[in-house]
Image (cartoon, rainbow, N blue to C red; front, top):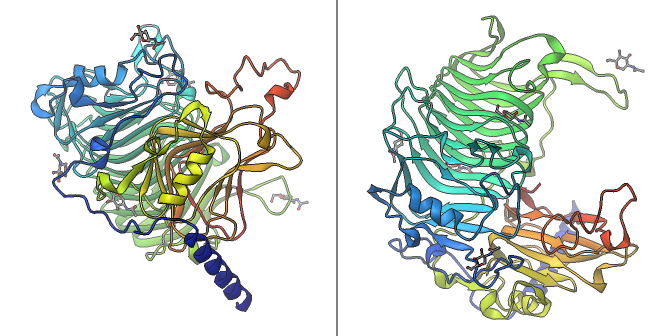
Length: 586
Ligand SMILES: *[C@@H]1O[C@H](CO)[C@@H](O)[C@H](O)[C@H]1NC(C)=O
Ligand SMILES: *[C@@H]1O[C@H](CO)[C@@H](O)[C@H](O)[C@H]1NC(C)=O
Ligand SMILES: *[C@@H]1O[C@H](CO)[C@@H](O)[C@H](O)[C@H]1NC(C)=O
Ligand SMILES: *[C@@H]1O[C@H](CO)[C@@H](O)[C@H](O)[C@H]1NC(C)=O
Ligand SMILES: *[C@@H]1O[C@H](CO)[C@@H](O)[C@H](O)[C@H]1NC(C)=O
C-alpha cells in the first residue's frame, strides 16, 4: 500500500511539472455554449482536406445537408438533397467501387425534421452526424420505399454497393428516426447496417409502431464483420434489433415495447453490455442452429436489466454443443417469469424478480487441458476488479465525448496554427507547438487531413482532441526504421504523467516503411474514472492511399514482403500503471 501511495505521489508530481511546461494559462473549464446556438460542429471553420484525393484542393470533406438544399422543415422531401450531399465529389459507391480511403466525408444535419421517402445511403468512409444539442429527426413518409431510412450497403441489380466484410469507416450519431407514419405492417427499418470494422452507431432513438401486427425493425444486419454500437433507444417494433454479425460490441442499449427486443440471427463473438429491456415479449431470441449462415457461436450478456418481459432469452435449440457458447453475467430480472426458455416451451432456467449472477453454456477449459467440459448452468462468478465497476456495480463505460455544451470559441484548429495535414508537409514541429500552447485550455480540432510526423510527438496529459472524418497522424522517415530500437510515433502522456486525455475520431498510422515504429505508446494514467481514453479512434497500418503499404507495394506473392514493406512491430504499447478506456478500437 505504502509503495503504491509513493508511486502515485511521484506520478502526481511529474504531472504537475509537466503541466507547467505548457504555456496555456486559462484552463478549458466547462462548456460555455449559448443553449440557443447550434452544435459547435456546424459553425467551426470547415477547412479539412482529403490529402490523397486526386482533387485534394477542391474536394469537400464537410457537407452541411442544408447547403445541398435539404430544408429540415418537416414538410419538404429532403431525401434527394441529403443523398446529393453524401455522394458529391466522385465518392466510392454504386457497386463499382468496393472501397476507398481518398473520399472521406462528414455529412452534418442541423436541427430540424427531415422528411425521408427513400433510403439515405451511407457511403464508405462517411460520418452522418446530427446536431448533438438537439438531435434532428429523420421522418419516414407513409409511402416510404426501401430497406432502411439509412442504408449502409444497398442491394442493387449487380449485387450490393460494398462487400459486407470490407465495409469500413462509418459512423451515425445524434438522430431520432421516426417510422411511425409508415404502415405498421410494412417491414420498414430504421437502419440497414451491414458493415465491418471501424464503424459505430451512437446516440440514436428509433421510434416504431406498437400495433400488434407491427413489422417495423429498428436495426437490421444480415452479416458483416465487426463494429460498435451504443447509447441507442428503440421504441416499439417487431424487433428492436435483428442482427447477424461477428466480433461486435454493444453497450447501453434500451429496447421498450418491442415484440422481440433483440433477434440474434447469427452471432459470432458478440458482447452485449448494459442492455435494458422493458415490456418486450422476448428479450433475446437466439436462432441457434439456424439462420444464415452460422448459428450463435459466442455471446456474452453482461449487466442487463429486463422488466416485464415474459422470456429473457430464448435459444431455438438445446442440443448441447451445437448451441455455442453463452455467458450471462449480472442479469437483473423484474417480473420475468422465464429467464431462459426454449422454442419447445421447456424452461431451462426459471426467472422471477431476481439477479442471475453468473450462468454459462459451453465448454469450460481448465489449465492447459485442450479438452473442454461441456457445461450448462450456474458457474462461479468472475472476479471483477472494483476499478472496472461503476457505482451500480456494472462494468464502467463512458460515452464518446462530443462537447455539445462547448462553444466554437473553446476549440482551436490545428490548420489555423501551422499544421498542414496535406500528407506531405512535416507537421511535427507545428503539432508540438500546438499541444504545448493549447492542451488543457482548448479542445484541439484536427481538421480532416493526414498529419505527417517524423519524430515522436507527445500528446500531453490534459489534452482533449477531436478529429474530422478520422483525421490521420502518421509517422514517417528515418526515426521509425530501427526494428531493434522502435520508437513511438505518438506518446499519449509523457512517461509517468496523469490527467484527462480524450481522443476522438483520429487514426494513428505510419507511412511505410516503418519497421521501427510503435504507433501509440500510452503512458497517461487517468485521474477520474474513464478520464483517459480514445473513442472511434483507430490504429491503421497499410492498405490506405498514401501509406506506401498497399497491394502494389507489398505483393502477397508468398515472398514474405520486401524491405519497402516493413511495418511496425507494435501497434500500441500500454505502459504499466496507465489506465486508458478504449471504445471502438479495432
Ligand atoms: C476532379 O475534379 C474535376 C472537376 O471538378 C472532376 O471533373 C473530376 O471528376 C474530379 N476527379 C476526381 C477523381 O474526383
Ligand atoms: C419517440 O417515442 C417515445 C416513446 O413513445 C416518445 O416519448 C418520443 O416523444 C418519440 N419521439 C418522437 C420524435 O416522436
Ligand atoms: C450476407 O447476407 C445476405 C442476405 O442474407 C446474403 O445474400 C449473403 O450471401 C450474405 N453474405 C455472406 C458473406 O454471408
Ligand atoms: C446511455 O445512453 C443514453 C442515451 O441513449 C444516455 O442518456 C446515457 O447517459 C447513457 N448511459 C451511459 C451509462 O453511458
Ligand atoms: C481434460 O478435460 C476433460 C474434460 O473435462 C477430462 O475428461 C480429461 O480427463 C482432462 N484431461 C486431463 C489430462 O486432465
